[in-house]
Image (cartoon, rainbow, N blue to C red; front, side):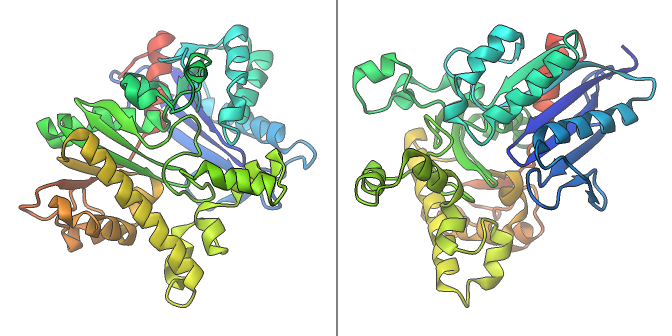
Length: 396
């Protein structure tokens, strides 16, 4: 096992992230031995990035995704040397109500997971394509699916139910929750940094291109903003978040949009991009808001929805002890954190401006009734740990 590695793949529609973890070390190191990313898949400027200057790469325009997977295999092989891969861990967004923990993948599991593609079309099909490719190319190599829905299996029934007919519940229409690998990592690392406070009433804010909140008590999920699909809850980069179903009926009945058209609007043409008309990225929007009313409106709506939902989750928890920001925007955008915290002053949250600007681990002021914190997420390590544990490596 001294030369053993776990490979982690996180496949999206336009990017594939890859990492190698040393499976022989005990506990499993939280940082990978190597990581890389293919981005811009399907676009005109694909690149490979391993932490330095991104490298332009050529991908077959007729089959860009298989070409990107082949590039990943080539770069991984170049990194192995005398070492070998003992397992591959995949972030799989949707595990439905059947898969409540990581699972070794076989043909039957793969077939099950294909049934959830309509619920996570931005991620599920691409993770499954990578799994299927490896099943054919290296059938002896263990592969493990790690589900973004699994952390939320502790949700009480009242949080999982949708207000539809009981028949819909029995057919499996329910709220699942997502970003579970990120929240699972926080359940490990928050007690290390914040002690018993982390076991109290916690709201974690995973704010990236996709975004959600999770209410945790005792390090377990009690409520979350994403539901049946990854469209629900907060306003996101290009996704709408929670939306009056009547608006969808209007788009289809009055404006005559097809189901495909509506899906395209909800997943790709809404959120910060849709409202601003400029970009899904707050880093590009913030410098323009003073001169562009649509950009200002987009950012105001984005913050308002987060503040409102944090308030709702605080009500479910019966109060709030710890607010944690994570993921790309949550970890790195001090201005949006400032605006969100300003909207929560009524709860007793007082921000330390200097700590926030420095992206400190604790950004609330001394004496604040609520501790506000920034905690980098580490979904890759959670997936690697699960695969190492299932396949005989060194779990953390």
